[in-house]
Each structure stands twice: as C-alpha cells, then as structure tokens.
Image (cartoon, rainbow, N blue to C red; front, side, top):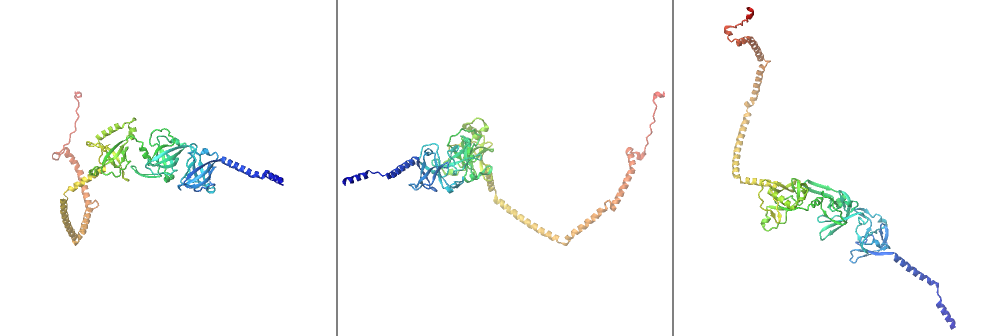
Length: 553
C-alpha cells in the first residue's frame, strides 16, 4: 500500500495541464501590446490656457492642418487657481514640430471684427489647432493663444516692431495701409513699462514687403479725423474697419531717396499723424525764444513759423517753461515767452544745392535781426481762432537790448496788428478821458436849453400859421389864384397865331416886309452914292473907244 500511494503522489506532482498556456499567452500579449502602444506614443506636453472652455479630456483632439496629431488626456486647475493646465499626448513622430515657434489655439465659433470663423466646430466640437514651428529649441511647455494667429510661419512677408509714446492703443487685427491699400495688419499689441510706450508687431504681406526700407515712416490712420488748421476745418474719413479699430499707414513723407533694405523685426516709431511724421524729418534746427506782447490765445504747439506763407519752422512750447520765476515781477511779466524751432532743412533745397551749416544760419539770422527782421502773431483762421507766428521786416529798427533768455537766443518780436489796434484804441480812450468833459457837458446843456426855447418858438409860429390857414380869406386865395391863371391863359391864347391879336400882328409884319423890299433899291443907291439924295443920281458915260496912232497916220 505504501508503494502504491507514493507512486500516485509522484504522478500527480509531475502532471502538467495545457490549460495553463492560456494566461501565460495572455500576459505575453498584454506585455507586447503595452510595449507596442508605448513605442507608438509621442511626447506628452503641457499647455497653459486662461480657461478650458469647450475642451474635454479624452475627447478633444489636437490637429495640424486638419490632421489629428494628439489628444487631450487631462485638464486640471493650476496651483494658483488662475489658469487651466491641459495635458496633451502627441502622436509618435511629432517631436519635430514642438519648439519655441510652435503655437496652440482653440478653434471654436467666433464672431469679431475679423469676421466669423469656426462654424465647422458647431457639430464636431471644439479642437486645439497647432501651428508647427520651423526652428528653435524643443519644448514641452506652451501657452495657449487667446486668439487665432493672423499669420503663420508659412506666410510670406516681413514682421516689424513699432512703438508709440503719445497715441491711444489699437487692437490686434487693425489694418496696415500703403496709400490707402491694405497690405498688412497688427499681429500683437503690448506695453513697454520702461519706455512707457505701446509696442506693436505688424506683418506686411509679400510682395508689399518690398515697399519697406530704412527711410519709410509709420503713422496712425484714424477712422474719422476732424481738425482745425490754418486752411480751415479738415474732416477726414477712412474705411469702416479703420473707423472701428483704427489703422496704420506708412510711406515716405518727402522726396527723400529710397533707403536700404531692413531686417525682420526692425523697430520704427509710430507717429500720431502724417504731419507729425513729416516734421520729424527735420533733425537740424535752431531753437529761439520769442517774447510775445499781448494775448497768445489760439497759438498752440505745432503751429507753423511762416514768412509770406512759406513754412520755416514750428512752435514747440506755448508758453515756454524754461525760465524760473524768482520774484513777483516775473509773474507780472508783460511779455509771454514761447519756444520756436527754426528748421532750415525746409528751405535749403530751394536756396542751395549744398548743405548750409547751422553756424552760417545763425549768422544770417543775426544779420536779419539787425536789418529789421521781427516775429509777430497773426490769425490764420477766423473760424477757429488759430494763430501762427509770422516773420516780417520793419524800417529803422531800434538796437536790440537783450539777445539771450535763460540760455536760449532771443528772436525779436513786434506787436501784432490786432495788438497795435488795441493799443491805438487804448490811446484814443486815454485822450478822450483827458478832454474837458464837464465843461463840454455844461455847454451842451445850455445849447439844449436854447434849442428847447427855439422849438417852443417854432411851435408857437406853427400854431399861428395854422390859425391863419383856417381863416376864410386865406382859404379863398386858391380860388382867386385859379381865376387869375385862367385869365392869363386866355390872354396868351389871343397872342397866338390863331388868335385875333396874333393874326393882326402877322398882317402888320407882312406889310413891313413888303415896304422893306420896296426900299431896298433906294438903300442900295445910297450905299453906292450917299449924295444922290441931294444931287440926284449921276449916270456913268459910256467909254468911247479910240483908234491907235499907227493906223491914223
């Protein structure tokens, strides 16, 4: 029995059942699948976003050019509770697109000034779009863009940086114009705390990037601009998009030659207007202080300095704050200082082909001051009340007493025509105040009393005349006058040719005419022989012809 039982036990221990192959094979397959899945997985990255609106772990896809390249695996809140941390498992082979230039943004329905986008995600749901980077160091941590980028690395063109210290902020997507034609847009807006300037990154599409060179200038393009200038009230209206979000324009503001080609991300200054950009070209100038007598109301910084309509410079400060107030007399100053910049580059091209040094300009201006060159305020627009500084010349100028004012040379001035008129009016009023007004008023009162007496006498005479006219005898005078006129008319009718007297007179005149005609021969004889009336008329004897002597002999 013991041998049989021991043999049975040994047989049981050594027996192997084939069913055990099934879990063994399952473990091998699971390990193989795990290794295969692990080998096919790409890197896992982290994207920080402001929120996870429209995103779901395990469902939201990551796409590049509308091809799936990953999936969201986890979404959680950041430790400071201010951001959303999104974990994304990328597919194998996507490591090359993950670098410093890679961009992520959420594609979902959007409505903005750029238009309507993302309508295709209404049914399929939001997804994360990735713009692969071309170059740069590999990264695993990224930031989600708030808005889809307006351009990608595939777009051809040039990117530039702009900064502005005196303009309002413009929005991303605002257009960039060249002569009114849209050639680009604003990609990014930021603020530089150190320079206290608003910075922009703009993109100009190809082939318009060839228009950018070192001599171009950039200025803001307001959608609607209303400005009072020396020419009047200027109203400028741009496109509707510029009216809503503003815009930027660039170009050359003068006839300067084309500059050199600029590199990508070159920085330019953004001016408030085209005029401001043009004025910044004049980097050679001489600053003068002008002491203006009278009111400077209507004179603003930026106003032109002109001579017969030709601009020579610009007003910089109104009033000038460079002088320190040391006493009460400085507060009660009669002349208000302003700072004016003379810019010779505005007229050098018209005067000479060669550049004139500033020292030569200072000498010429000093000679002009001695010869009577003066500055004065003049009104450029009666509607807006704007004023400009005009240069004029006076005869027999007085010698200049002062030539410097707190470190700045003085530009001599004269009173404006309006101020001169005010001075003349003041002088007239002063003279009127010195007149003997009381004596004049006394004499005037006496004259008025005499005039009142005269008026009373005239009133009495008028009353007597009225009484005279109301009498019956006076009223009968017109009837008698009419009768006399009728009698005179009848008398004149008798003396006319058709009247009785007129016919008698005519007959008498005819008889006189006939008598004169009968006496005419007698008068003729008396004219020839005045003594014929006494001796009678002597008749002349006929001349008897005589024969010649030769024939008689």
